[in-house]
Each structure stands twice: as structure tokens, then as C-alpha cells.
Length: 171
Image 1 (cartoon, rainbow, N blue to C red):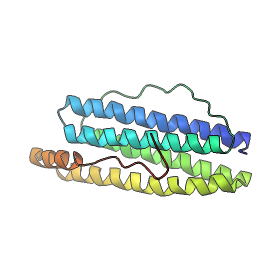
Image 2: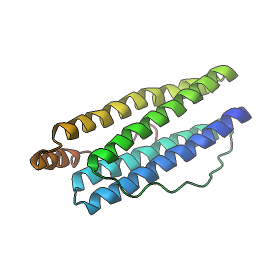
Image 3: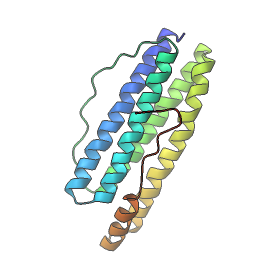
């Protein structure tokens, strides 16, 4: 059975994951409006990843006899100066999520909640990957800042991304 403090923290994380999906969907809409279909595809896949993360937290909380309480999701921004600015916000946002995951790990240690601590290890590793991926795209965009052909090639590359659900998650 999950402790009340952890139950609240996990519910807050479900909301944060759903906000992440909402943010990336807003970014996809912005990129679609710029006719950057590959960039938009990358964001749409990111939306599915964030929804899967929320589902993982949801399933874990219910498995521990906790109660999922969904709360309001705030509206995300709707425009960015450029694809680079959007991806810089992706990295900033993923760093924020990393901090939230670290806070959950710290709380699990403080509460002696070994089951939650074990569950969170997957998210710790996932956040390393999320930040590295966003940073890699930012570096590519910076290298091609004054090269429209480079932007086209990055767009084509990002169009190849597909969603692979994490193990144990069905959407």
C-alpha cells in the first residue's frame, strides 16, 4: 500500500506527464504550421511517450492500492520563434521533469518506499535519454542555423521517428 505523501506526489507526476504531452502536442501544431512535418512527427511521438509515462505512473499507483486523482492540466505555450527555440524549451522542460523524478526518488528514500524507488529507476534512466536526445537535436539545429538545406535534412530525419511503447504499457 502506498503512503499518502507518495500517493499525492505520484498523482502530481501523472499531471506533469500529461502536461508534457500537451506541451509537445502544442509544439507539433506550431511545427505543422511551419510546414516542418518531420519536426511535428518527432513531437507527436513525444506526445505518445509522455502519455505512456503517465499511464505507467497510473498503473503503478493503482497496483499499490493508491487512488489516482486527475487534476487540471494548464494550457501550454502556443508559439516559438523557431524550431531551435522549441527544442531549447524541450530540453529545459525535460530538465524540469528530471528534477521532478529526482524529487520522487528522494521522497521514496525518505519514506523507505522500496517498491516506488525500484519503479522510479526506469524513469531516472529515461530522463538521461530524453535530455541527451533533445540536446542532440539542438546541436544539429545550431550547426545548420543558416543552412535551410540542413533544416530540410533534419526534418527528414525526424520524420523517421516511430513510437515504441515501454514494456508493460498498453495505451
